[in-house]
Length: 285
Image (tube, rainbow, N blue to C red; front, top):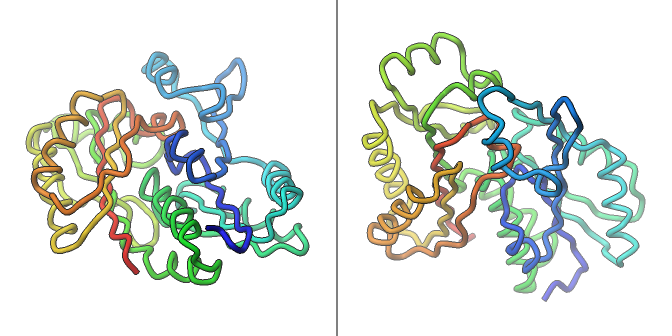
């Protein structure tokens, strides 16, 4: 029961499934995907499979929403009777969306707006919007939820790997030397976000079988002794994600799989096909 009329919004880079967003009334703000013919709105008029179909010949650009787009969202919520907003954004190291949300909030009067830089990406960011919406429904106050989000920022453990480093290199997320060495030696890094919200390698393994096993081991280790929420993401890789889910259910029985999802188009652009990502999050405060 949301007693304080608090709205939760998140950008589509947070990778929250559409049905989950509807169920919890999380308002999604589309990031932009630019091809030569037009600019698309993420999860509205473009889906990730379209991006994959146009690889490798076309790698589009992504961009953040405008300040006016966010102002319009805040004003729309205000007209609906909302008095407070929790705005969740992917890491400011990867996108200017956090700053756009913050600058737009400065233009809104008579509304408490908390803008949160998750220092993470994909469901590692979206889990905070999910958690906030769940806690608000349980009757938590705006202040308790926002304080809790800040305390739990390092409790969001997202790790992922992909079949190729080509798209990380194209997006400027990996250097030429790391890309060349990875391809020549079939090295596949397990990638996560550090405390500053930038990518780092948790481990490097040779081959897909080894990297998948190591990532599952890493997730099991950070989940031990706690009841955790899990999410499994894939980049045009549903069969492997289903295999990972079966393994996680066996190894982490005290867990809830809150959702599994194909990553959004904006996330697919920088990672390419073949991605598997696993999130572990402790929801307790």
